[in-house]
Length: 220
Image 1 (cartoon, rainbow, N blue to C red):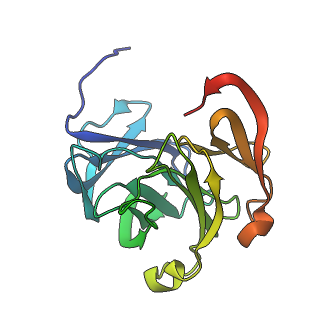
Image 2 (image 1 turned 30 degrees about the vertical axis):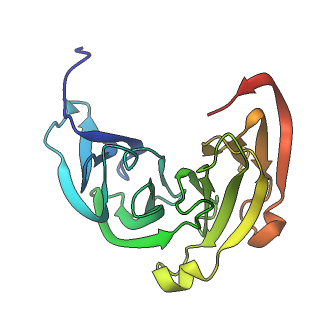
Image 3 (image 1 turned 45 degrees about the horizontal axis):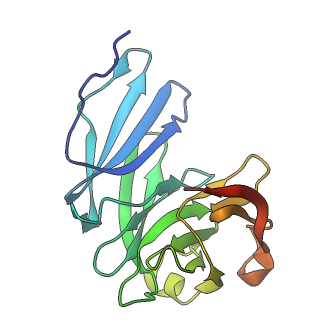
């Protein structure tokens, strides 16, 4: 029954909570900042184990921009993906074992740059866990870009060659979120966008731009 308990400092804004496969508790996943370490904490009826499992990625987050950006688990909880604003902008993808919280086999996917570097921020898997969507908002508040990759191979070269630019002439302010209706929602300037068929490769995923008016508000 405690709150505001200090656990760890030097962390990026990335944070994920996933239910354990045996329903005994949850995994709490975050990333070192600066650094390459990924921390997986165990949370159960006894509370939070403040000594995490530690795994290493390939890319080192930095204080200035590398700590920014979302991370997500795939719907089948076998993949972990993190936006990394380092080395001109990348996405790092890992295998994840929900049974014991192991993070392994990191690969790096380059996010195309609009102005010499990219700022990947929003990220989400398709409901079938085969496709990955990423928003680059490096030139916000101007137009951003929404990209799609087929990540089923877990091979960085093969994945890089599957890239599709879904849209690059609308404002994307950052976040992507899979909804209970199995559509992916994207935040924009004064509106929400929606990927209505996110399991479909290419433009057939059907991005509906500004399907909802936010009445002058900006979503994040």
